[in-house]
Image 1 (cartoon, rainbow, N blue to C red):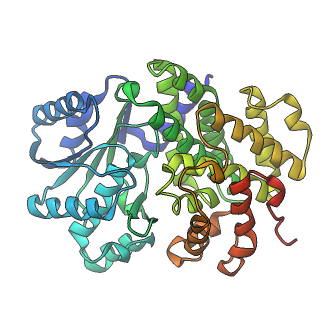
Image 2: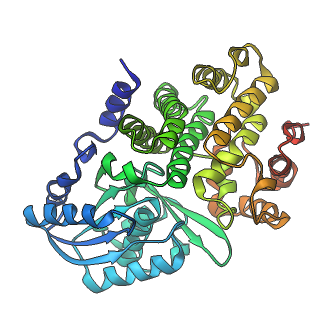
Image 3: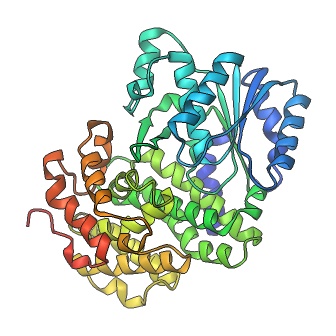
Amino acid sequence: MTMFDTARQLLRQFKGDNFVSGFGVLPEAGRLCAGLGRRAVLVRDVFPGSEAHVDVILASLRASGVEVCATIRGAAPNAPLADLARIEGELRTHNPDVIVSFGGGSTIDCTKAAEVLHSLGGSIEDYFGMGLVTAKLKASGASLAPHLAIQSAASSAAHLTKYSNITDVGAGQKKLIVDEAIVPARALFDNAVTLDAPESLTADGGLDGLSHCLEVYYGAAGKPGYERIEEVALTGIALVMEYLPRAIRNPRDREAREALGYATDLGGYSIMLGGTNGAHLTSFSLIDILSHGRACALMNPYYTVFYAPAIQAQLRAVAELCARSGLAGADVQSSGGRLLAEGVARALVSLERSVGNPATLGAVPGFSPRHVERALTAAKNPQLRMKLENMPVPLRAEEVDDYMGPVLQAAVSGDFAMVRDYGA
């Protein structure tokens, strides 16, 4: 069985008939939506070539008897609070019985959060954390409008997941809703939409998908479902390592685009099976200087070294993929302990550099010590506690400065020796 066959099988097990993906599947939007409602609002991104795709979606909805009562502009990168307020206001005006989103992760995330506010009211701060939407739904007896999420980028897999990232741009801080209630009822991803994606988006999305798989896999040891997590995560990691550089070299390589679609969707599957941890947590404080996927990818090598004592089995499996893809020599698999972690970390840095990502925070334009301070402060926020708890080496808030601080300083300089062993 090829990696593609494995990926298709896993995604079928994950979503069944509620998710359609492949090339040329955009006209399926109407059929998927018609089973959810008949009066829709479309929240859509605007990007080069998007109008032709939107025309296909609209025609498909109409042909299936779905009335589109309004079309709303989607969200800017990182789903800013201002866009959340605007989209929620439009939903309140039109009060649809089904919502269709078409865009990247930011627009889909913003649509999820906007419907929460539309149906449940309150402030978005009321819902940051885990399970708070579900709790409010149970207490109020309300329900959310069903959501058909149509993905336009191989990246966050927001169309498949229970996550909504929203950003306070003024404070430079991202926060997170984690709740099964906001998983889109149906999802669609036409890989053809990604053929004209710019190099920067391709790299960012692929690195985000890799980070989802890697972080969940690191944190999975000893937890229920470890074998499934391992299969899903390693398949996604292998696809990114092999096909992301290829998609950068030849953006219209259909096989590479299909591979990245599967890889990032498997990243979405991974984060529904487990949780991301340190690199994602730190990335939330770097939104003014790095895109999300690049921030996660930059940080993961340094957290890899920090986690070394707890993830030896995972490191050996990832090391094998690094060697197979040419990111490291075969000897990377022969070491153990911290040396094994540093070998995998160097291979991850090689992948980053091959697609134009900086390998240190110090090399990022606009970086300053305040980003480290912001990240350490955010890590102690109870609303983001799940990221600390998901770490293979879990930290308490009072340990953040002592252990996460050296990880961040290592990321500034690129010196793995600065990472402190837990307990040392």
